[in-house]
Image (cartoon, rainbow, N blue to C red; front, top):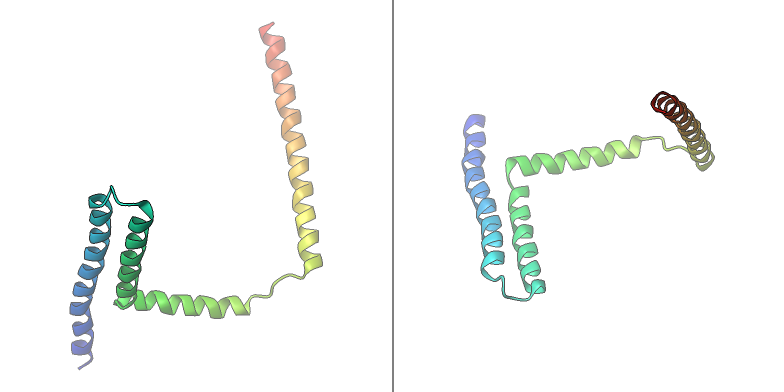
Length: 122
């Protein structure tokens, strides 16, 4: 019984994917066909057709899994312990100090190598 229930959405998914591809193809072809029309109308048409394609996509099995993933990600984000403002400032200052130190060391090595190359050439 379950196999039959799973087989039916798969066959409908093929039609839904075909509809998605058809909507996107119509958007692209319409944009090219109406190349002389004002840009705003073409943009509105493409956005509407792609929006409709997105709605149809979200009704497929993969689209439903994407929605579930988004809900699960939202739940996981709520579980994150975010740093306080002082911790964020302290970490940012440490990173900036490390970047300045590494930049100075790279400048120093570059200057030494440049001096060595100049002394060999001249």
